[in-house]
Image 1 (cartoon, rainbow, N blue to C red):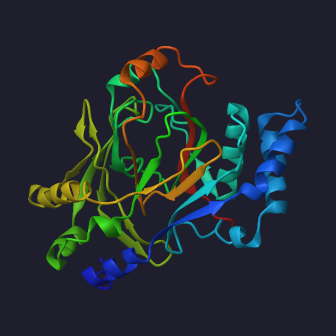
Image 2 (image 1 turned 180 degrees about the vertical axis):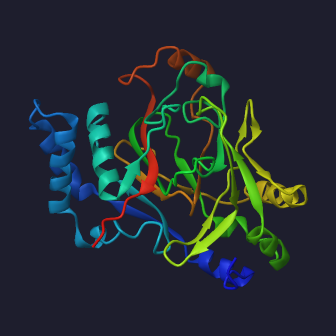
Image 3 (image 1 turned 90 degrees about the vertical axis):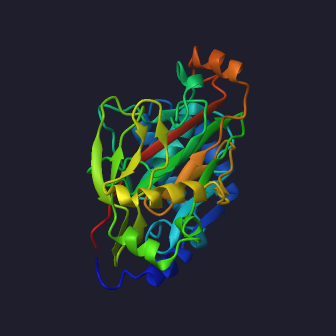
Length: 317
């Protein structure tokens, strides 16, 4: 670690991070009018390109500036509301893919994971810490067991009758009661991350818990989920440091998250190593969740989100 990485420097950098909220209501009518008159012979790919052109022609100048800043200008996450209001799963997917491309998100599809559509799936009523389950999802960053960087995570709400928002946790709140010695330990601390139910095989990767570079700033790698089968998803390589993870696990229960808006047309994109995300138990009866999970259908499922996650692609100048 560079000499610049002192506890005070870490605190100063983390304290600058923010979550931004933008309202795209001025675009809602334009997008829905375009959708109504779309060329139905076009593929989803062509429709996505057409929508990107429409968006770029109509974005407000004060919004355009954010598309290149996520994760690098003390902007940890951006929640955009009212992109559309029509509950249509095809429109939602096209909007999702268009917005991801505008934010330079290179979606990565692993052949052992079905990650795009999030909704209650069979047996989901019995699971927590799983995007397609009913139970609580504990704060975490995605894919910390993967070699390929997962710089960004994006979620688009097609429908959420349960009104269950995504929760965002900034690391600055997590470390408020950590002293200099504890943060110094974290700078030397290595952690093993383990995949969970979302991955059909077991994957593991060792990482530093804190990293820094001049382009991306301070990044933190944390996953507090506990899988039904593999157990804790984050384990200190040196057992003497496990007490730091346990302290963070206790502290996060006291942190006040920033909530997304669980409405049709919300697009949330986060810098995966700058903010942790989570979700409460779905706001619905468990017996209804069991009934819904046995008949997975995009038209009737009470909560349908699209997800993309992967590396940032930068356009060379």
